[in-house]
Amino acid sequence: MKVYFSHGKESGPWGNKIKRLANVAKAQGYSVDSIDYSDILDPDLRVERLISVLKDVQDDFLLVGSSMGGYVSLVASEQVNAKGVFLLAPALFMQGYKKQTYSNKTNVEIVHGWSDDIIPPENSIKFAKNIDCSLHLISGDHRLNSSIEVVEKLFSQFLTSQAHNKALQRTSC
Image 1 (cartoon, helix red, strand yellow):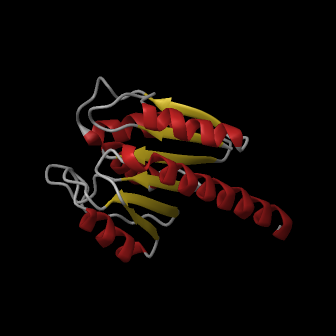
Image 2: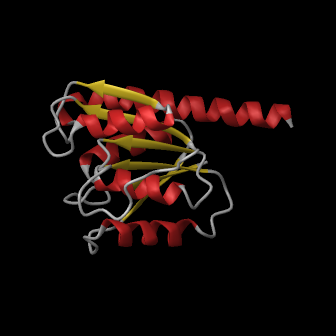
């Protein structure tokens, strides 16, 4: 299985957080890729880029997005066959973003910092309540750098649960 990372508005495809999470994924046997959106500021054009990357992917994959990349991953997941979506302080319900309602049916998990002053944690609470998904509100600001070890543990657990779900699907067929 492969993990596709989508970075935030002001970061790059291989920033510190993505590198650390990519190492967690590799340690569990996942292959990884991080899409470069640094030439695109519009979140919905970023969604189009991700969908174009994924349209011909035949293998199972997961999407991971941070901030604007969380919006990108979630919106794209409504149109592709992602097995799961892991979101870090996702830019949901943000003014100026085209999509304001989300109909995701994929396994979604969110991590958001209580002290986020860029994207209110209430946005993730609202989304998680609407779709009944896992939400981890942790100490930290928007970048979650002060709690990166907690994020790594939560991501590792998410990956383990995805692998377990895949194994269950194989044995029940």
